[in-house]
Amino acid sequence: MNRAGAESIPCLYWNQTIHHRYNSQSDSSGEMGLGDHNYCRNPDSDVQPWCYVAETEDGVYWKYCDIPSCHMPGYIGCFMDRGSPPALSGASGTSKRLTIQTCIQFCRRKGHEYAGVEAGYACLCGSSSEVAALDIVSSSQCDQICFGRTSELCGGDGKLSVYSVWVGTCHGNFSSEAGVLYSPDFPDEYGAERLCLWDLLLLGSTAIQIRFQSFHVPDPNDLLELMDGDSGDLLLRIRGGQDPPDIVTFQTAHVRISFQSDSQLSGPGYVLLYRGLGGPGSSKAPYSETTLSPILDESHQVQSHEHHISRNACLLLAAGTVVLLLSLGYVMWRYVARGRCALLVGQRSDHSFCSWLYRHQKTQSGDLTSVNQSSMKSLL
Image (tube, rainbow, N blue to C red; front, top):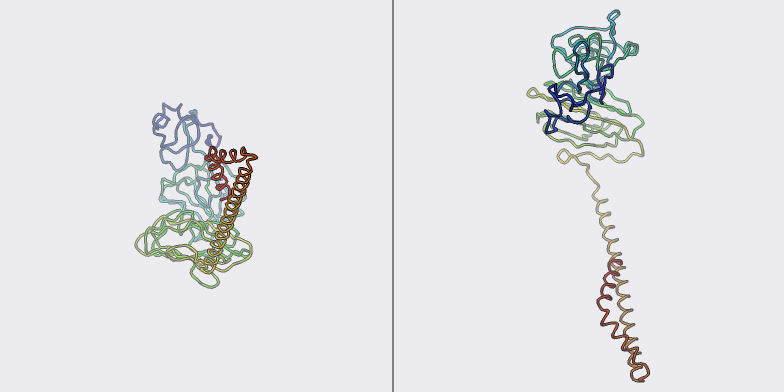
Protein backbone atom coordinates (compact mmCIF):
# COMPACT_ATOMS: atom_id res chain seq x y z
CA MET A 1 0.00 0.00 0.00
CA ASN A 2 1.47 3.38 -0.99
CA ARG A 3 -1.56 5.67 -0.63
CA ALA A 4 -3.06 7.07 2.56
CA GLY A 5 -6.15 8.78 3.93
CA ALA A 6 -9.70 8.85 2.65
CA GLU A 7 -8.50 10.81 -0.37
CA SER A 8 -5.99 8.08 -1.25
CA ILE A 9 -3.11 10.56 -1.29
CA PRO A 10 0.20 9.24 -2.69
CA CYS A 11 2.80 8.56 -0.01
CA LEU A 12 6.14 10.34 -0.08
CA TYR A 13 9.30 8.29 -0.54
CA TRP A 14 11.10 7.62 2.73
CA ASN A 15 14.42 8.76 1.26
CA GLN A 16 12.81 12.12 0.45
CA THR A 17 11.50 12.89 3.96
CA ILE A 18 14.78 14.15 5.41
CA HIS A 19 12.99 17.13 7.03
CA HIS A 20 10.81 14.67 9.02
CA ARG A 21 11.86 12.44 11.87
CA TYR A 22 11.52 9.11 10.04
CA ASN A 23 13.41 8.59 6.80
CA SER A 24 15.83 6.20 5.13
CA GLN A 25 18.80 7.94 6.79
CA SER A 26 17.39 7.52 10.29
CA ASP A 27 16.89 3.82 9.51
CA SER A 28 20.36 2.99 8.26
CA SER A 29 20.09 -0.59 9.59
CA GLY A 30 16.81 -1.20 7.75
CA GLU A 31 15.05 -2.52 10.86
CA MET A 32 12.04 -0.23 10.36
CA GLY A 33 11.67 -1.07 6.67
CA LEU A 34 12.32 2.46 5.40
CA GLY A 35 14.23 3.02 2.18
CA ASP A 36 14.00 3.99 -1.47
CA HIS A 37 10.23 3.37 -1.68
CA ASN A 38 6.93 4.96 -0.63
CA TYR A 39 5.12 2.00 0.92
CA CYS A 40 3.24 2.39 4.21
CA ARG A 41 5.24 1.49 7.30
CA ASN A 42 4.91 1.74 11.08
CA PRO A 43 8.34 2.88 12.36
CA ASP A 44 7.01 4.40 15.61
CA SER A 45 4.75 1.47 16.62
CA ASP A 46 1.57 3.45 16.01
CA VAL A 47 -1.86 1.80 16.01
CA GLN A 48 -1.54 0.98 12.29
CA PRO A 49 0.76 1.68 9.30
CA TRP A 50 1.02 5.22 7.93
CA CYS A 51 3.15 7.38 5.65
CA TYR A 52 4.14 11.00 5.08
CA VAL A 53 2.13 12.91 2.48
CA ALA A 54 2.53 16.30 0.84
CA GLU A 55 1.69 18.89 3.49
CA THR A 56 -1.83 20.29 3.18
CA GLU A 57 -3.13 23.78 3.95
CA ASP A 58 -4.26 22.71 7.41
CA GLY A 59 -0.77 21.46 8.28
CA VAL A 60 -1.44 17.71 7.91
CA TYR A 61 1.73 15.98 6.72
CA TRP A 62 1.03 12.29 7.47
CA LYS A 63 -1.98 9.93 7.30
CA TYR A 64 -2.93 6.37 8.18
CA CYS A 65 -3.09 3.78 5.42
CA ASP A 66 -6.29 1.77 4.98
CA ILE A 67 -4.99 -1.82 5.18
CA PRO A 68 -7.86 -4.26 5.96
CA SER A 69 -5.64 -7.03 7.33
CA CYS A 70 -4.38 -4.71 10.08
CA HIS A 71 -7.81 -4.29 11.73
CA MET A 72 -9.04 -6.05 14.83
CA PRO A 73 -10.98 -9.34 14.47
CA GLY A 74 -14.69 -8.89 13.86
CA TYR A 75 -14.14 -5.51 12.22
CA ILE A 76 -16.96 -4.64 9.80
CA GLY A 77 -15.85 -1.21 8.60
CA CYS A 78 -15.84 2.53 9.15
CA PHE A 79 -19.23 4.22 8.65
CA MET A 80 -20.67 7.69 8.58
CA ASP A 81 -22.64 8.81 11.67
CA ARG A 82 -24.78 11.84 10.83
CA GLY A 83 -25.94 12.17 14.43
CA SER A 84 -29.68 12.49 13.91
CA PRO A 85 -30.93 9.85 13.95
CA PRO A 86 -27.92 8.05 15.45
CA ALA A 87 -26.19 5.50 13.27
CA LEU A 88 -27.02 2.72 15.78
CA SER A 89 -30.18 3.17 17.84
CA GLY A 90 -29.58 0.57 20.55
CA ALA A 91 -27.97 1.02 23.95
CA SER A 92 -25.15 3.55 24.12
CA GLY A 93 -22.72 5.14 26.54
CA THR A 94 -19.44 6.99 26.94
CA SER A 95 -16.31 6.20 28.91
CA LYS A 96 -12.91 7.75 29.46
CA ARG A 97 -11.55 4.16 29.62
CA LEU A 98 -13.18 2.94 26.43
CA THR A 99 -11.56 0.07 24.51
CA ILE A 100 -12.93 -1.96 21.61
CA GLN A 101 -13.57 -4.98 23.81
CA THR A 102 -15.35 -3.01 26.58
CA CYS A 103 -17.80 -1.70 23.98
CA ILE A 104 -18.25 -5.20 22.52
CA GLN A 105 -18.94 -6.65 25.97
CA PHE A 106 -21.40 -3.85 26.75
CA CYS A 107 -23.40 -4.42 23.56
CA ARG A 108 -23.32 -8.19 23.96
CA ARG A 109 -24.75 -7.95 27.48
CA LYS A 110 -27.49 -5.70 26.11
CA GLY A 111 -28.42 -8.34 23.52
CA HIS A 112 -27.26 -6.48 20.39
CA GLU A 113 -25.49 -7.93 17.35
CA TYR A 114 -23.04 -5.11 16.63
CA ALA A 115 -20.95 -2.61 18.58
CA GLY A 116 -19.71 0.74 17.30
CA VAL A 117 -17.02 2.96 18.76
CA GLU A 118 -16.78 6.68 17.92
CA ALA A 119 -14.57 9.68 18.70
CA GLY A 120 -12.39 7.64 21.09
CA TYR A 121 -14.89 7.52 23.96
CA ALA A 122 -18.43 6.70 22.68
CA CYS A 123 -19.99 3.23 22.36
CA LEU A 124 -23.20 2.54 20.37
CA CYS A 125 -25.05 -0.74 19.84
CA GLY A 126 -27.29 -1.84 16.99
CA SER A 127 -28.69 -4.53 14.73
CA SER A 128 -27.62 -6.05 11.41
CA SER A 129 -30.36 -4.16 9.54
CA GLU A 130 -29.04 -0.84 10.88
CA VAL A 131 -25.47 -1.67 9.92
CA ALA A 132 -26.60 -2.64 6.42
CA ALA A 133 -28.16 0.81 5.96
CA LEU A 134 -25.01 2.75 6.93
CA ASP A 135 -22.78 4.57 4.44
CA ILE A 136 -19.30 3.07 4.50
CA VAL A 137 -16.23 5.32 4.23
CA SER A 138 -12.50 4.73 4.16
CA SER A 139 -11.21 3.12 7.34
CA SER A 140 -8.51 5.78 7.46
CA GLN A 141 -11.23 8.23 8.61
CA CYS A 142 -11.69 6.21 11.81
CA ASP A 143 -8.43 7.48 13.24
CA GLN A 144 -9.21 8.47 16.85
CA ILE A 145 -7.22 6.67 19.54
CA CYS A 146 -9.29 4.91 22.20
CA PHE A 147 -9.31 6.79 25.49
CA GLY A 148 -8.76 3.54 27.38
CA ARG A 149 -6.00 2.10 25.15
CA THR A 150 -3.66 4.09 22.97
CA SER A 151 -2.82 1.06 20.82
CA GLU A 152 -6.40 0.88 19.44
CA LEU A 153 -8.51 3.14 17.23
CA CYS A 154 -12.08 3.91 18.33
CA GLY A 155 -13.80 5.50 15.35
CA GLY A 156 -13.37 9.11 14.34
CA ASP A 157 -15.05 12.50 14.32
CA GLY A 158 -18.55 11.61 13.11
CA LYS A 159 -17.24 8.19 12.04
CA LEU A 160 -18.16 4.86 13.59
CA SER A 161 -15.97 1.75 13.68
CA VAL A 162 -18.33 -1.24 13.81
CA TYR A 163 -17.53 -4.70 15.21
CA SER A 164 -19.46 -7.94 15.56
CA VAL A 165 -20.11 -8.80 19.22
CA TRP A 166 -19.22 -12.52 18.83
CA VAL A 167 -15.50 -11.69 19.12
CA GLY A 168 -14.28 -12.64 22.60
CA THR A 169 -17.49 -14.32 23.73
CA CYS A 170 -17.22 -16.97 26.45
CA HIS A 171 -19.91 -19.31 25.08
CA GLY A 172 -21.28 -20.04 21.65
CA ASN A 173 -22.46 -22.50 19.02
CA PHE A 174 -20.71 -22.52 15.64
CA SER A 175 -22.24 -24.26 12.62
CA SER A 176 -20.66 -22.48 9.63
CA GLU A 177 -18.35 -24.50 7.38
CA ALA A 178 -15.34 -22.44 8.49
CA GLY A 179 -14.66 -19.71 11.03
CA VAL A 180 -12.53 -18.29 13.81
CA LEU A 181 -12.81 -18.82 17.56
CA TYR A 182 -11.18 -16.34 19.93
CA SER A 183 -10.32 -16.62 23.60
CA PRO A 184 -12.70 -14.86 26.03
CA ASP A 185 -12.46 -11.05 26.04
CA PHE A 186 -10.24 -11.02 22.93
CA PRO A 187 -8.49 -8.77 21.91
CA ASP A 188 -8.12 -7.90 25.59
CA GLU A 189 -6.45 -10.38 27.91
CA TYR A 190 -8.74 -13.14 29.15
CA GLY A 191 -9.94 -12.71 32.70
CA ALA A 192 -9.36 -14.77 35.83
CA GLU A 193 -11.69 -17.57 36.93
CA ARG A 194 -13.22 -17.98 33.49
CA LEU A 195 -15.03 -21.17 32.47
CA CYS A 196 -16.04 -21.01 28.82
CA LEU A 197 -17.57 -23.56 26.45
CA TRP A 198 -18.04 -23.56 22.68
CA ASP A 199 -19.62 -26.16 20.38
CA LEU A 200 -18.50 -26.74 16.80
CA LEU A 201 -21.27 -28.71 15.10
CA LEU A 202 -20.60 -28.83 11.37
CA LEU A 203 -23.39 -30.88 9.83
CA GLY A 204 -22.42 -32.40 6.50
CA SER A 205 -18.75 -32.69 7.46
CA THR A 206 -17.03 -35.90 8.48
CA ALA A 207 -14.03 -34.23 10.14
CA ILE A 208 -13.01 -30.91 11.67
CA GLN A 209 -9.58 -29.38 11.14
CA ILE A 210 -8.30 -26.82 13.65
CA ARG A 211 -5.31 -24.53 13.15
CA PHE A 212 -3.73 -22.71 16.10
CA GLN A 213 -3.14 -19.22 14.74
CA SER A 214 -1.75 -18.12 18.11
CA PHE A 215 -1.62 -19.45 21.67
CA HIS A 216 -0.38 -17.21 24.50
CA VAL A 217 -1.59 -18.75 27.75
CA PRO A 218 1.21 -18.32 30.34
CA ASP A 219 -0.36 -19.90 33.45
CA PRO A 220 0.16 -23.71 33.61
CA ASN A 221 -3.04 -23.96 35.67
CA ASP A 222 -5.11 -22.59 32.77
CA LEU A 223 -6.44 -25.34 30.55
CA LEU A 224 -7.81 -25.68 27.01
CA GLU A 225 -9.53 -28.96 26.16
CA LEU A 226 -11.08 -30.29 22.95
CA MET A 227 -13.54 -33.17 23.25
CA ASP A 228 -15.67 -35.24 20.94
CA GLY A 229 -19.09 -33.63 21.28
CA ASP A 230 -20.92 -36.95 20.76
CA SER A 231 -18.91 -39.45 22.81
CA GLY A 232 -17.27 -37.05 25.28
CA ASP A 233 -13.81 -38.52 24.57
CA LEU A 234 -10.86 -36.21 25.17
CA LEU A 235 -9.21 -35.32 21.85
CA LEU A 236 -6.63 -32.74 22.89
CA ARG A 237 -5.51 -31.05 26.11
CA ILE A 238 -3.16 -28.07 26.28
CA ARG A 239 -2.00 -26.43 29.48
CA GLY A 240 -0.68 -22.92 29.77
CA GLY A 241 2.97 -22.71 28.78
CA GLN A 242 2.75 -25.63 26.35
CA ASP A 243 3.12 -25.28 22.60
CA PRO A 244 0.10 -26.62 20.71
CA PRO A 245 0.38 -28.39 17.33
CA ASP A 246 0.04 -26.18 14.29
CA ILE A 247 -2.85 -28.18 12.81
CA VAL A 248 -4.97 -31.04 14.15
CA THR A 249 -7.76 -32.97 12.43
CA PHE A 250 -10.49 -34.86 14.28
CA GLN A 251 -12.68 -37.46 12.58
CA THR A 252 -15.93 -36.09 13.94
CA ALA A 253 -18.41 -33.39 12.98
CA HIS A 254 -18.92 -32.26 16.59
CA VAL A 255 -16.08 -30.82 18.70
CA ARG A 256 -16.62 -29.23 22.10
CA ILE A 257 -14.01 -26.73 23.25
CA SER A 258 -13.63 -25.64 26.86
CA PHE A 259 -11.30 -23.12 28.48
CA GLN A 260 -10.74 -22.66 32.20
CA SER A 261 -8.54 -20.09 33.95
CA ASP A 262 -7.69 -19.85 37.63
CA SER A 263 -7.55 -16.76 39.85
CA GLN A 264 -3.82 -16.11 39.48
CA LEU A 265 -2.64 -15.06 36.02
CA SER A 266 -4.25 -13.98 32.77
CA GLY A 267 -2.78 -13.60 29.29
CA PRO A 268 -3.33 -12.52 25.66
CA GLY A 269 -5.20 -15.75 24.88
CA TYR A 270 -5.49 -17.64 21.60
CA VAL A 271 -6.98 -17.69 18.12
CA LEU A 272 -8.27 -20.92 16.55
CA LEU A 273 -9.21 -21.30 12.89
CA TYR A 274 -11.55 -24.20 12.12
CA ARG A 275 -13.08 -25.72 9.00
CA GLY A 276 -15.13 -28.77 8.15
CA LEU A 277 -13.77 -31.54 5.94
CA GLY A 278 -15.80 -33.91 3.76
CA GLY A 279 -15.12 -37.39 2.42
CA PRO A 280 -15.66 -40.85 3.88
CA GLY A 281 -15.27 -41.10 7.63
CA SER A 282 -12.57 -43.09 9.36
CA SER A 283 -11.83 -44.19 12.90
CA LYS A 284 -11.20 -41.44 15.41
CA ALA A 285 -7.54 -40.73 16.18
CA PRO A 286 -7.24 -39.21 19.69
CA TYR A 287 -4.23 -37.07 20.52
CA SER A 288 -1.86 -37.75 23.37
CA GLU A 289 -1.54 -35.06 26.02
CA THR A 290 2.25 -35.28 26.03
CA THR A 291 3.14 -35.91 22.40
CA LEU A 292 0.17 -34.13 20.78
CA SER A 293 0.35 -36.66 17.95
CA PRO A 294 -2.14 -39.28 16.76
CA ILE A 295 -1.96 -42.82 18.15
CA LEU A 296 -1.14 -44.96 15.12
CA ASP A 297 -2.14 -48.56 14.37
CA GLU A 298 0.97 -50.63 15.23
CA SER A 299 -0.13 -53.66 13.18
CA HIS A 300 -0.34 -51.46 10.08
CA GLN A 301 3.17 -50.15 10.78
CA VAL A 302 4.56 -53.73 11.08
CA GLN A 303 2.88 -54.88 7.86
CA SER A 304 4.18 -51.84 5.99
CA HIS A 305 7.72 -52.45 7.31
CA GLU A 306 7.65 -56.15 6.33
CA HIS A 307 6.42 -55.28 2.85
CA HIS A 308 9.27 -52.78 2.49
CA ILE A 309 11.89 -55.37 3.51
CA SER A 310 10.44 -58.02 1.16
CA ARG A 311 10.52 -55.65 -1.79
CA ASN A 312 14.15 -54.70 -1.15
CA ALA A 313 15.16 -58.38 -0.88
CA CYS A 314 13.60 -59.13 -4.26
CA LEU A 315 15.48 -56.27 -5.90
CA LEU A 316 18.83 -57.42 -4.43
CA LEU A 317 18.21 -61.01 -5.53
CA ALA A 318 17.42 -59.91 -9.09
CA ALA A 319 20.52 -57.73 -9.29
CA GLY A 320 22.74 -60.53 -8.00
CA THR A 321 21.33 -62.97 -10.56
CA VAL A 322 22.06 -60.60 -13.45
CA VAL A 323 25.65 -60.04 -12.26
CA LEU A 324 26.19 -63.81 -11.92
CA LEU A 325 24.92 -64.50 -15.44
CA LEU A 326 27.15 -61.79 -16.91
CA SER A 327 30.18 -63.20 -15.10
CA LEU A 328 29.47 -66.77 -16.29
CA GLY A 329 29.02 -65.57 -19.84
CA TYR A 330 32.33 -63.74 -19.80
CA VAL A 331 34.19 -66.78 -18.37
CA MET A 332 32.67 -69.08 -20.98
CA TRP A 333 33.61 -66.70 -23.79
CA ARG A 334 37.20 -66.57 -22.64
CA TYR A 335 37.32 -70.35 -22.28
CA VAL A 336 36.01 -70.89 -25.80
CA ALA A 337 38.28 -68.21 -27.25
CA ARG A 338 41.37 -69.65 -25.61
CA GLY A 339 40.44 -73.16 -26.76
CA ARG A 340 40.09 -71.94 -30.31
CA CYS A 341 43.39 -70.10 -30.01
CA ALA A 342 45.16 -73.20 -28.77
CA LEU A 343 43.66 -75.18 -31.61
CA LEU A 344 44.81 -72.66 -34.19
CA VAL A 345 48.30 -72.45 -32.72
CA GLY A 346 48.56 -76.21 -32.73
CA GLN A 347 47.60 -76.19 -36.39
CA ARG A 348 49.97 -73.21 -36.94
CA SER A 349 47.46 -71.80 -39.40
CA ASP A 350 46.54 -68.42 -37.88
CA HIS A 351 48.69 -67.16 -35.02
CA SER A 352 47.48 -63.57 -35.58
CA PHE A 353 44.11 -64.26 -33.94
CA CYS A 354 45.76 -65.36 -30.67
CA SER A 355 48.11 -62.42 -30.60
CA TRP A 356 45.24 -60.02 -31.19
CA LEU A 357 43.18 -61.63 -28.40
CA TYR A 358 45.86 -61.44 -25.72
CA ARG A 359 47.19 -58.04 -26.83
CA HIS A 360 43.68 -56.53 -26.60
CA GLN A 361 43.14 -57.89 -23.11
CA LYS A 362 46.41 -56.48 -21.80
CA THR A 363 46.61 -53.08 -23.37
CA GLN A 364 42.90 -52.27 -22.93
CA SER A 365 42.41 -53.71 -19.44
CA GLY A 366 41.86 -50.26 -17.95
CA ASP A 367 39.13 -49.46 -20.45
CA LEU A 368 37.47 -52.81 -19.82
CA THR A 369 37.49 -52.14 -16.07
CA SER A 370 35.89 -48.76 -16.64
CA VAL A 371 33.22 -50.29 -18.82
CA ASN A 372 32.49 -52.94 -16.20
CA GLN A 373 32.19 -50.34 -13.41
CA SER A 374 29.90 -48.14 -15.48
CA SER A 375 27.72 -51.11 -16.34
CA MET A 376 27.53 -52.11 -12.69
CA LYS A 377 26.38 -48.58 -11.64
CA SER A 378 23.69 -48.67 -14.29
CA LEU A 379 22.57 -52.09 -13.12
CA LEU A 380 22.38 -51.08 -9.45
